[in-house]
Length: 166
Ligand SMILES: [Zn+2]
Image (cartoon, rainbow, N blue to C red; front, top):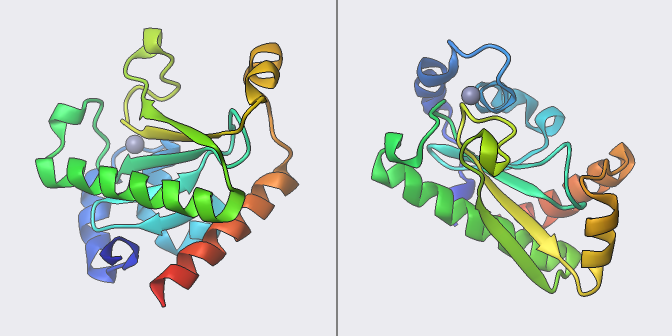
């Protein structure tokens, strides 16, 4: 799984594409690999990162984002798009191993009207689903999962990720 290798020499590249976007939490996570735990980043590739959503629909809700602050998929080089899909697949596998979900919603919200919370920096959602969770989702809507649950999910996913690297 080459996707999990962090290459320090990429840092200059990351800084070059993100440094001018203060206040964007994805750029912040992208340019601070030393703070992966704080940003809930589980894995990185050469051009993208996989992180837990701090404001999830359900616990285990992951995001995949390129390091580059671009609004459209078409603004990314094709190898960076491929990288995102590989990371999404990796995220799905981590969730399968750590949380045993019965299904997934994986996709993009592009533009405000489509529900994008951060329209300037494209990202992909990976939402694990379990039989019966729909009632919970529709009545409660966007829930705030307690921080302890997010930390526990982070540890679970990181353990699987690290185990797979060996
Ligand atoms: Zn950004």
